[in-house]
Length: 184
Image (tube, rainbow, N blue to C red; front, side, top):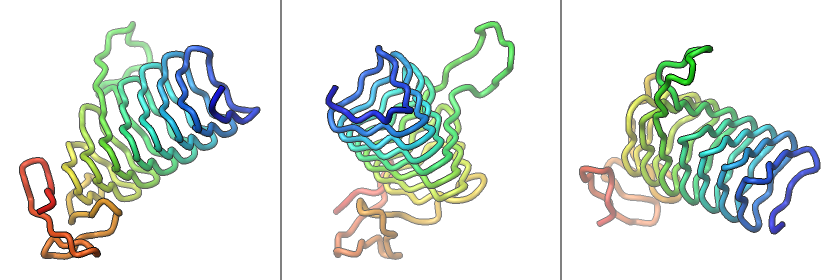
C-alpha cells in the first residue's frame, strides 16, 4: 500500500488509490473508484464506484464524488461541494434513471458549498466561487459566482483575477477564445 489511510477511513478492496495519496478519517472509498497519486482526500468524503479523481487533487471535508464525476489533475475542491449526477432523482425509480456526467478539468477550483449540476464541464483553471450554483458549462479560466452562476471575470493559472485588459500579475496577456481564455 503506497498511500496513507486513516484508521477510521474505509477503502474497499477494489478501489484504486495512487501512491502518496492521503485518505483521512470517516472517508468511504467504494470498489471501482479511482484516485490518482499525491491526492489529499479529507474527512468525511465519499467516493462512489465509477468516480475518477486525477493526480495532485485536494478534496476538502464532506464532499460526495458520485459515479460519473471525473476530476482531472491539480484540482481543488472545497468543503461540502454537491456534485449532481441525476437530473430527475426519485427515491424509488426502479433503476430507471440517466447518469449525467460532470468533468472538472485540470487546475480548476471549486469553492466551499458550491453545487455543480450534472451534464456539465468546468474548464481548465476555472474558478467557482463559494456557494455558487453552476448549471451550465464553465470555460477555461472563467470566474463564476452566484445562483445561478454567472461569469464575472477571469483568473490566471495561479488563481488570481486578471485585470480588465486580461493581463495577469506576471504580465502575461490573454485573449478570449471560443473555449475560454488563451494565453498570447
